[in-house]
Each structure stands twice: as structure tokens, then as C-alpha cells.
Image (cartoon, rainbow, N blue to C red; front, side, top):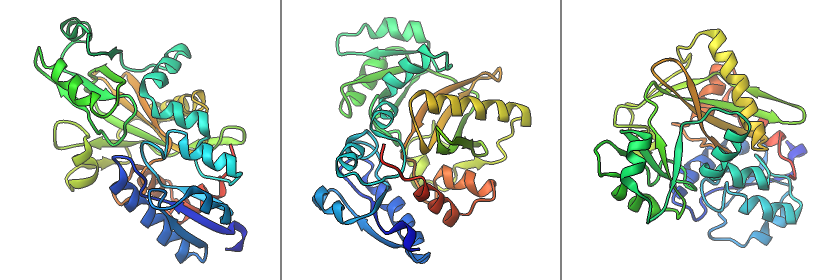
Length: 306
């Protein structure tokens, strides 16, 4: 397909999610090449970014720092090369769970209660305020890196120390225990966004951590998700609004939790989701009748500068 020109598939990178990115990128690269597109893998850990000047567009399959936090997006803006996914600002905000929550809360998007932690925080007071169990997570990491579930009183300090190794910004978040779900989204904010069928995630371990996401084969993914058609449609529209609130575009994923009373709480946005055999957006797309090949082409078609 000559209409796309020469395409760079960015994969690998320098974040803690490098291995997942390599798998995502390999799947996308093979799919593009199989459809006759002049696509080449490009690992920014090993190559200078100015080499991208020879490409006509870029498919970003980087995850985590330097890949979905606005850094690579800014470099591509400077090179004036169309790229997939959200722009600089939305990528940076979407990567930062704390600032995402602040913005969502200001715009009326329901998200679990949270507190920003520091080394001198009164951890006992936070445990009482948010209740136990609770989650502790680095604000700027993905793939559940550095996340802990604190179940016993006095455990927050150790969880903070673990998370702080991954990022100086650390969040404590109220536990919501009625189920984990995600909504895939495709399209441009200006021209219309489409929500894919909701997927429910049922991990067999304590929570949907790195192992459950990428290493285990017993995590269940339910699509249909089990919600009523009316409830699913309502949440899909709210997910689109939450996506747009952060300035996101192109494609992505909005994760949410459900409590035991059926109230949903938006958790975070992923602006560069995985494209592996365990990944959620391809799963949701398949349920909507969109093959992996069609999904990859659709995302590439949405490539833009900014």
C-alpha cells in the first residue's frame, strides 16, 4: 500500500515495559508487511531519532516512559512526521495518573478517591481516610509496575517505598472491588470517537498485575462483559468524554472499576495500548467485527501531527 509511504514501527525503547513493547511492535510490523506496506522496525534505544526523517509516518508501539509520555511525540512534532495516537499534551497527562485524576475530578468524571504520598506523609492517617485494602501506585508507570495492594494496617509505608523506586510521584487509591473493565476507543476527537465493546478482566491472582497481564494464561477476558446493553452504552459514552477531557485522540483505552453496588469509577487512560496476543484493544475490536489487520490499518490511517 503505497498510500502510507515508508512506515516506522517504534518498538522497544528504554522503559520498564520494553519487553512488552517489543512484542507489540513485532505483531504490528508483521501485520503491516503482510499487507504490502513498506514498514520497518525502529528501536529508539539503539538508533538516533533523526533517522526517522526518512520515514513518511510512524506507528508508535512504545509503552511507558519516553514512549507514551509525550517525549517521542514531541520529537516527531519537531520532525513534522505524522504519528499514531495522542499528541504531546494528552500523552503526558494520560501517563500521569495524578494529574489525570485532578483534571477528571475538576470536570466531574468519577474516579476512585486518592491521596498523593510523600516520604513524610502520615501513612496511618491515609490508611484510615481511604480505608483498607487500598492500592499504591507510581503516578507515571504502566503495566502495573510498582503497584501494591495494602491489606493490613501499617503496610502503606512499605508500599510507598516500593512505588517511589519507579517514580517520585506516588498515589494511594481507594479500593473498588466490584470488577475491572476497559473500553477501547478509536477515532479523532474532532471527527468522532467510537467506543469498542467493553471487556471485563478477571485475574486469578490478587489483582490485574504485570504477571496477570503478560505471563499467565488463566486470566479471563469477558466480552460481552456482562453489563446490560443500556449500562454498557452509557459507560462507553462517558469513557469517550473522559478520553476527550484529557485531549486524547487517535486510539487508546480507558480503564474503569465497578463497585459492589454497580457504580463505575474511571481509573486511567492508556494512550499507547499493547498489541500483543494478551492485549485488550485487539480483543475488543475482534468482538466488534474488526480483525487485527483492519485494526492496525485503521490506527495507521489516523496518524497525524499533533
